[in-house]
Amino acid sequence: MRIIKIMNITNKNTNYINITISMNEIDTKLVPLLGSKANPMIIYLKMRSKIVKSSLKDCEGYSIKKDCHDKGYLVMTMSIRQMAKEFNVNKRSILKAIHLLNEYNWIDIKKLKIKKSFRAQYVYVFGTWNRLDGGRVVENFFNDPFIEFE
Image 1 (cartoon, helix red, strand yellow):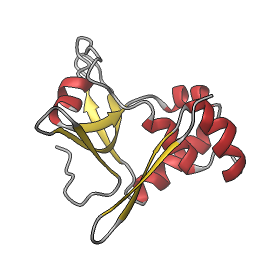
Image 2 (cartoon, one colour):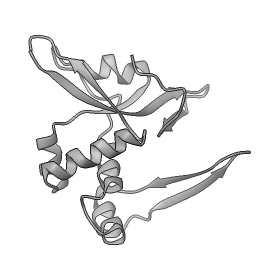
Image 3 (cartoon, helix red, strand yellow):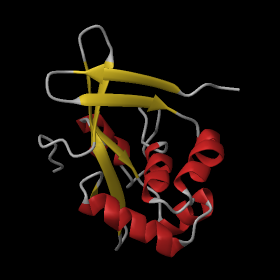
Image 4 (cartoon, one colour):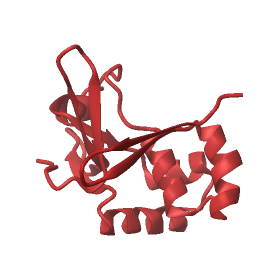
């Protein structure tokens, strides 16, 4: 059994909590605590677990890694239908959670134009990342006032 790691980091003005938790632990430990799989925080954590990683290879005409990840953005993309199926929550609950997360600046929603398609792909932006000297990666989440997505 994996243990949930919690680290409290403090600076002058803010306390941060960094939690490492698996999808299974979200379902078995947090859903009972928060009362519903459709809770926006549960949806947020599950979406966040799907953030694009550097190992992703872009498909032709679908360049989320090049257009988003490689520019320093923490993003994920998945259709509402796919999220509903994978997270085991109805589509209406997914839409409601995404709307609330966007309204309270936990995520930003952008459209990424796909070549040879009349539809755009929705991209959910969670923040930014950058690599420090020494190779350590720092991720900045939530409503960071310095984040702007082009």
